Image 1 (cartoon, one colour):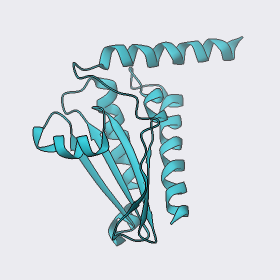
Image 2 (cartoon, rainbow, N blue to C red; image 1 turned 30 degrees about the horizontal axis):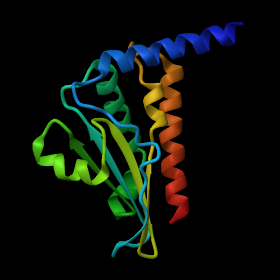
Image 3 (cartoon, one colour; image 1 turned 60 degrees about the vertical axis):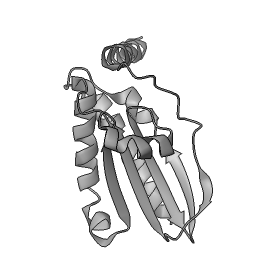
Image 4 (cartoon, rainbow, N blue to C red; image 1 turned 90 degrees about the vertical axis):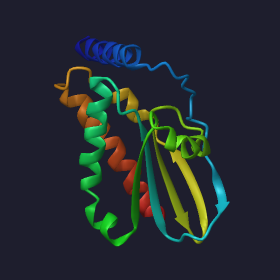
Length: 159
């Protein structure tokens, strides 16, 4: 019963963040929007692309801080070029072309692996379920961190 209550509270937190953080832009579900098999010139690397809004609500600004913290854990890979990390503010019209290329909503996180000149892009959408409207929920924070670490580690293992 206690576990059900915790799940219920987590669901309420997520729903309140989604309702409270929704922007005037139409957001589309990118869970199935992946591109794979695109031939390119890159080899054995991971590209991480993060789209965000600079005028977001508290919980999404907190998620942005968490993403920056997580990316610091991969400093060695960023330094040697194994991982590249690009952030794009979707409120800046200068970023509209790259946002369109990814068919990205206002907030999204993509991991693209390049192996032997072939790319595989994956949208990591589950992290948005773990945004925290209070900034005090350690369970949500750990789920957010664990999910992104797992996805990035899987990408590194794939190259």
